[in-house]
Length: 172
Image 1: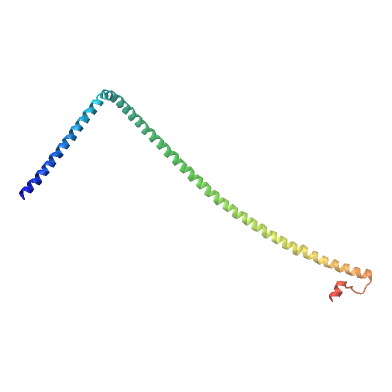
Image 2: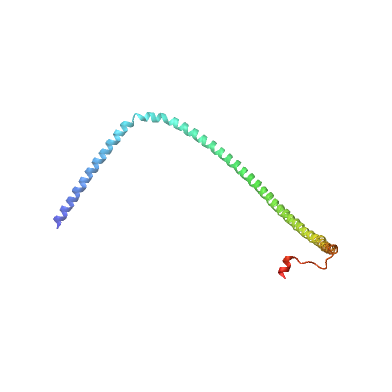
């Protein structure tokens, strides 16, 4: 059993050695790649170094612009807040005026309704008085005049009684 254990250990040691060799190959390939990249970018380093002052100047102007923008945004925010507050006050005033106008309009409508009701009642009373005071006497006068006319017709014709019409005779 000791020999089997030694064989197994030898296999594992061999596998570990192969893995280390593979890792060393990868590490060497990475080293070569980095060297190639460094050789390719070496001409660009002076260009990058010359860009650093320009980038710093751009950053400074950007910072100044950002600070100015912040100040302007603050001013705009303050002015907007003032405008909104003024608008709120004006809307509150308009709302009060509208409520007052509604109350007055309701009062006027109530008064107008009372006037119309009173006018209608007076018109009805007037019609009733005209009916009682004028129409009733007119009917009575019309009845009296019909009676006088009948009496005059009777006296002028000399008849003894009223003559029934043909329709009345058929009805009887």
